[in-house]
Image 1 (cartoon, helix red, strand yellow):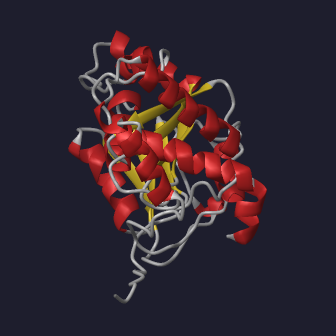
Image 2: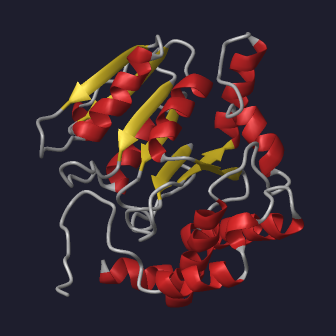
Length: 270
């Protein structure tokens, strides 16, 4: 049988160690454990601790597991935007993130570049009333990247708004300065080389506080996946609902492999 390699936007090729980790998951019956069990809590903590090490995530950032990065777009708008968001749009995915805001009844502003083109921070004008700045570090549909230095420049000019960075098709490569961003997120089927079906949301206390403010105003921020509901369970290494336990386990194993290599080595190779 001829092995095929697909140069598409994803899912990507599985990480080399995934088959062995799948066998381990089967042997340990990971697919049937309760998400309220001690075994799951240990699994959850192993994965989040490993990710903190890999990406050097500060203690004031939480790590949530959701169904996909697409869901995270919606949760950002619902939980953190009362009126206005701003988006840099230069491809199919950044455009869809922008559209979500309007579909959820918010006023969405945008800076737009042609497909295959990027942005210059000095040319981006963000309205003062913007609550959430939504950037795409690597536009999945075109492969155009926004350098971390440019993201930092945008933050320096707009310190009051929350800054969200879509890093679906680039993490763990970009070395974010977490003091300059409030949140980033990714899906596991791209650079982590896993089957699709898990989104990972990294967010700080500023994001959590904004969600609490909107809840206090009786703004509808969602149902079972509000930031408050997810946070209440994450503090105990759990989730509100039965999650993709299988993929959380596999992600923890792949992150463990990556940490053995070292993030500096991974970034140098890339």
